Length: 122
Figure 1: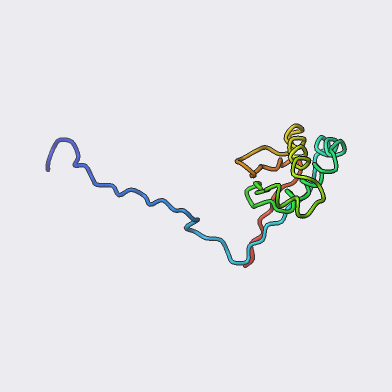
Figure 2 (figure 1 turned 120 degrees about the vertical axis):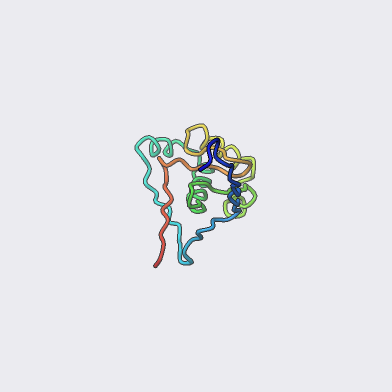
């Protein structure tokens, strides 16, 4: 029997994963549920046509965490507005708190507007 402080054990550091180590089932789909609150619906009624089209695009391209990558050049290919008008539309969406900026060309869509739903197959 020895007395004194316990011996230090060498602890290995946990590895860092760049991707999810648990993975996702191959048959996973993301469904966007469009269910606006009364406030969001009132704000959407006041949006310009360009802002409304950008919002529809964002809801269609939403990821499972609620973010969306929305480069305005890609949106311009779908809708007949110049990039400056689409940029003003994004500003309107941020002004009414319908979206928030995450990084450059990436946004968070408010859960008051739409919610992502992850559906996993068996």
